[in-house]
Image 1 (tube, rainbow, N blue to C red):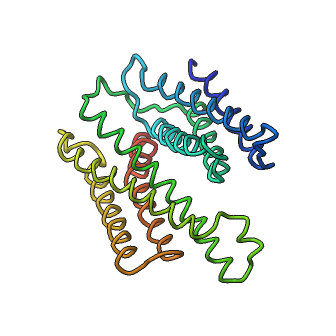
Image 2: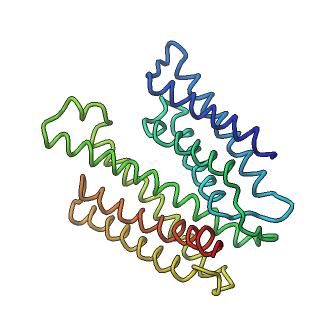
Image 3: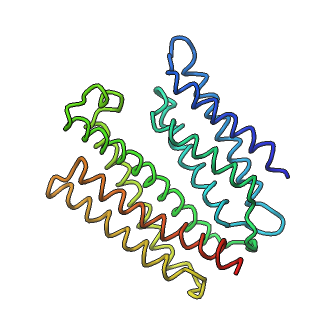
Length: 265
């Protein structure tokens, strides 16, 4: 397949980056620069895979593994771009292996769902907004997990373990920045969905819309609690994870049931 070569290059580059990050980077020895080069190669090759899949002659493939791989690409690009001016974020140690796994799944289990024909510009906009919103909120989920761990170990007076994580205050600030960005894009995505999606009979659309709206409410309440009640730490993390879990169930859960279960019945 056309996607095999760029897919394998991306997987190798992601894993090399993780190995280098795991052993620590030193800007003066050049390892930090090598990590950034490998991560850029991984993202470019990953993007090549997505381009080949989406530009298939049979039509645009929006199957489960394709969309998982697309979201993994956006998250990896966000993490890589954020690290260009400084050392790559610790999130890359988690994000890059997940991106490699998404590529492996796409290579081993290509989507069998029927490809769509030419997509309208409005639908493309909706998809882009949704994917980028989910990516920011997925990064927020990872930051929420790290924040919960840091808060827990500090409360247990295990400072040696807590020092392995970024400072809690830094994680808290980054968490809400990611939530603000993700919620803003999710709001635009929901609005574009109501305006542009013409066929309300699409399987799973109603469930997806209701669950996504519920997740949107959770993030709005979280931001309200943050600025009016001072929510932070483990409480903010739980609300963040609840919202992200709903988003995952609303989109990927619906696609999993329709494409991998009902499709085979």
